[in-house]
Image: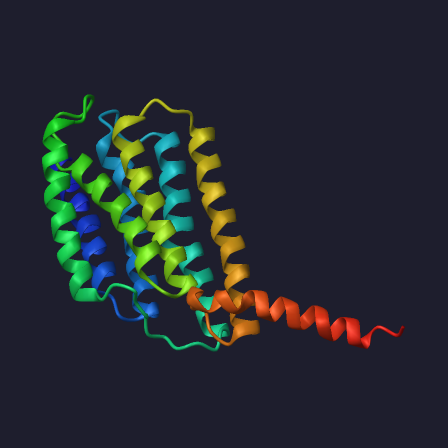
Length: 229
């Protein structure tokens, strides 16, 4: 079991590095889907009690939402918006990878200071969770497109979920399901916002939102002119 858990931890870290170096929105969606499936499998091998109905339900929900439904929703949004498929950056992929290596090294150091209390054999669990959380935050602030920032939000939540798999094994299943539904609703709302942004501004770069005030002012002015005095 520990070998399988360590393999999934390594896969999640590799996915983080792939997202930092990704240049295509379509590829980024597929990569984050792989991370969602790996996270769905993680509880099945971490717990020493073996496969239970509770773990099976949680794994199916996580794989369905994070590995299939949400990526499919993002891919559909990408097809319907008119912007390019290439990722645009505030921080380029090479610099992102270098920053990622530094964060991973610091995560390994933090992991040695704060070992997992209930699972002493998984020394890479805390570094993986911390690195995934920081990677998600970094993607949110270093990528220009709203769709890529949604992916960053998903990666951030994936790191928090991975942390909970090792630290909060006794939490109620209802709480975990509630968190998953919150994530789905959050991604759904952000996806709708991206669709409306792309429809009004012909792209999904958040840098273009600084023109929103002028756009609202123009709409108000035109509506006032159309209103008969």
